[in-house]
Length: 482
Length: 93
Image (cartoon, rainbow over all chains, first blue to last red; front, top):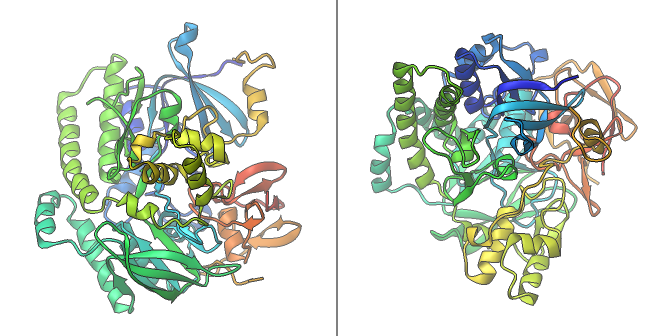
């Protein structure tokens, strides 16, 4: 049987991927969207399962979300592969064809899709921060606490303490409180924004008033339920023996380094919310250039004004170009979809293109301010990992292994060198949850920076897949099956 | 050993799906992810790394801390998998 051939394959069905697919489909492109979840929406618009029998809801601050999901569902010509993981992309042009091979595992087995153009819209994930005790059951990333609540109606056990630096924490904390969970404290790493910072943020507000009003509402909800809001506070350890029993908090300076005495707060759940890292492994694997921007989500994929990468035919939209939120992801996706249609010879609608550009400009202003105000102080965060703290969760590697290797090998100065020696990044998450901490440890040891320690190389498969998947996609001699 | 659930359901649901976790019967509501059901039903160990119990962490398919063996398929992420009647979950891989 011949493989599926598409004008456009979109990886990721969040705001960017959906907007791109709708745009491309409207221009007559044969379009396939692949996503790991059961339904469209990405993390931000994750909906309860159909079995719960609830209407589609737009989340806080994004009244257009339900329409986007409906428009996507109504675009009957779009093909959807859900519960499907793209584990690699091969450039088939080296073998004389003019498309990409997209390698996918699906519940039904492995499958290959041919793509004339590829759009990577793989979103972002919670920024991992290694602190003592963070491997214990009862520790959740902010996105996990929220996803469980909004898409599964399951709430973490209280007392709950949230620690981090991202405004999402206020929303998650308020949602937990409204769901009846016992939230006792939200501890922010930074101080209160100064008047000067707030004034600087003002130009970013038009179009996002709803979100800001919602944030204010969250603060009121938390205050009304007696939740303590602390600033300039970082977690120094999550405590407990066979489960979380508390978290130690301490005052921190402007660089988020511990500067005060610790106090222990009882907790059954500790939520970590220090912002997001762009999900760029697929783009890296296929050879797209990336650059480091700490405030915008770490390693980001470089794109031109049409959202094409330096690998011709591969486009990237949404968080992997810079973590900027759903509003900008949607605008980038629409622009990328239109650019891909034009690239494949479809006529350009000048008025539509103008509207897409205006959306982009407006969302960018807001994203830039949020990034500036909530940028992570990485050296401070890395200093929270003590010698005994697990840096690589998959392989259970403590920081002392990494620091010891760096001391013994003064010329080792990259995360890949640490990986080869210490196994950090060799487990199933393939370094997503340790790369930036290892980079921070290298930077601390060498007096350098996180990007100076480079990044893990990304290879096929970018996520672990059963060997069976290879057997289904490749002959015994390694030749590709059609 | 602690047995307190790590999470609970905001509203009670009819639990008419049943599956096995390490041979123990566990009940879940249709549409729940394996991870959500396991948390609400008091399961505290998903993966195990060098003897340490690990549970759901990211809930979006990134960290693999909630990965288990489901019907003999290893490294199956419970946060991305919907419960099915009769599924056989093995933790601690």
